[in-house]
Each structure stands twice: as C-alpha cells, then as structure tokens.
Length: 172
Image 1 (cartoon, rainbow, N blue to C red):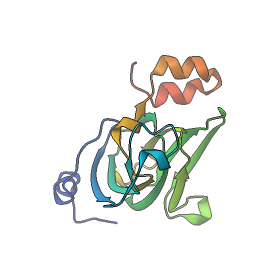
Image 2: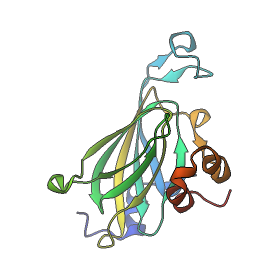
Image 3: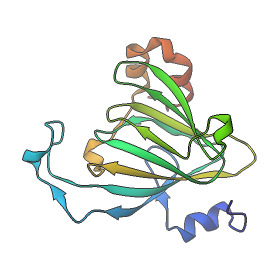
Image 4: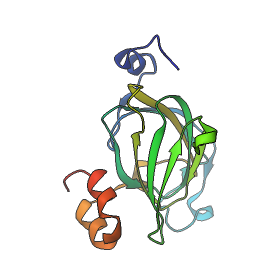
C-alpha cells in the first residue's frame, strides 16, 4: 500500500483530475490505432480508438455514481481499500462484486464490467483513505459513450434495486 503518500499528494503525483461520476482520474493510454465507424457496432456514433486506460482514485466517503458505457470495461486493483462495485445487468439482474487482493474472501484483482451494465462503486473498508484502481476500455472510451444514471429513471426501471440506486445515485 502507498503509505508515504497523502491523498492530496497522490492526486498531484499521478496528475489526477475530478471525474464527473465521482473520484479522480487520468487517462494513461489511448491507442494510436482507430476502428472505423463502419467496422464498429451501430451503437457507436463515430470511430473509436482501439483501447484506452486510466488511473481511477476514489477517496473514502465518496462514491462513483451509477453510470454505463457502450464498451466492455476491465477494472484493475492497485492499492488502498478494496472497492465494492454494484452492477445492474442489461437484463436487470443486480450483483455486487469486490475488487481487491483478498482472494480468500472473494475479492478479485480484476473485474469485467460488460458493456451497457449500470454500475457504481465505493471503497469497501474504512482502514484506507482511498482506493486506487485502473480501468481499461475496448473499444476505447469516449465521453460520447458515457451515460450518468438519472435516479428516477433507474428507480422506475429497476424498483427491486431501490436500496442500491438510492445509495449510489445523486439527487436527479
């Protein structure tokens, strides 16, 4: 664990900036090669890079609000507290997974979020002041493919998941 860094210093050292879903991020990779629009599924309005990667830092007490993207996203655990991820699949099935290194307790160092899945995240443990993770997206991430959940819309569509939707959405 990065014990020599304060949260502010870690944000500065990694050159992170605020993310619209909560927490901090910085893109660390964007492939130079692109996929043409005609080679992509129709859900993409324009060409995309083949892949992208970011650092993602979520301080204790904050959460990444429910959102979804049009590509598969692989989360990687780097440091700090384990990360709880709440997922609502495209079929409406709720699941909760934990990103971390305690394999014997069911944590996993890498988790796939399939495209179109609504998901939210929050640090799982109080012992660390943050979770540092990474996300790799293919085809590459573009904010045009990012959708922040509207609380009322999710509640209407998935009333059985009310507890989690209220916990991990912001007042919209």
